[in-house]
Image (cartoon, rainbow over all chains, first blue to last red; front, side, top):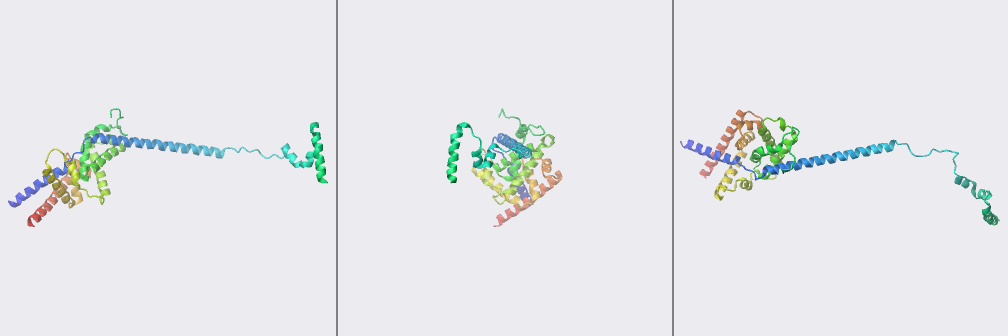
Length: 123
Length: 182
C-alpha cells in the first residue's frame, strides 16, 4: 500500500515537472522578429551575390582587355636603311661639311666670319 | 511590413503564413533542448532561414515535423558548441520564460527548483531515452512527430519514453530515500 502511494506520488511529481518543462512561451512578437531577420539575411545574401557577379564581370573584362593588348600588333616602324634624316646626314658630314655647304646669300657674311675664326684657330 | 515583398522560396511557398503558424511550436522544441530563451529564438530564426533556402518547402507533406526536425538538429548543434562554455539549465531563463502573471514568488521558486531538479535527473538518463522524453514533453508534440524527428517508429518512441520515465522515477526515489534517511 505504502509502495503504491509512493509510486503514485512519484508519477504525479514527474508528470507535473515534465509538463512544466515542456511549457515555454517565446517573447511576444517572435513572428515579426523572425520575418524581419529572414528578410534581412536573404537581402544580404542577394547583395553579396550581386557584388560577386560584378567583381567577376570586372575581372573578366580586364582579362579580355589584357588579352587584346597582348595580341595586338606593335606600333613600330620597320628599319629602312635608305631613310636617313637630313639632320642625321648633317651630323655625319661634321663641321667641315657644314662649312663647305652652299649657303644663302643673306648668310654669306656670317659664313665668311665663321671661316676666318676657324682659320685663326687652326693657326 | 505591408510593403514588404512576400517571402517565397524556390518552391514558391509563401513563408509568412508558415512562420505565423509554426514559430511558437518550433520555439518550444528549441527551448526544450536549449533551456535558453534567446538561444531558442536564434534557432527558430535559423530554422526558417534553412527551410527557405532548402527550396523543399513546397514538396514537404508534414511541415510541422519537418520544421521540428530542422530545429531539433540546430538546437543539438548549438548545445554541442556551447558545452563547456556554460551549463544548459539557467534559472534566470526559466524565470524569464515563465509567464509573469500567475504564481507568486514562492510558487515561482518552487517551479524553478522543480525544473532544476528535473534537469539534473535528466542528465543521468541515457541520451536516446532522454531525447525522446524531452521531445515528448513539448506541448502539442505527438508521438508520430517525435518519431519523425528522431527517425524511429512510434512504438520505439513510446518504449523510450516509458524507459526514460522509469529511469527518472528510480533516481527520484533514491533521492527521496536519501533525503529522508539523512
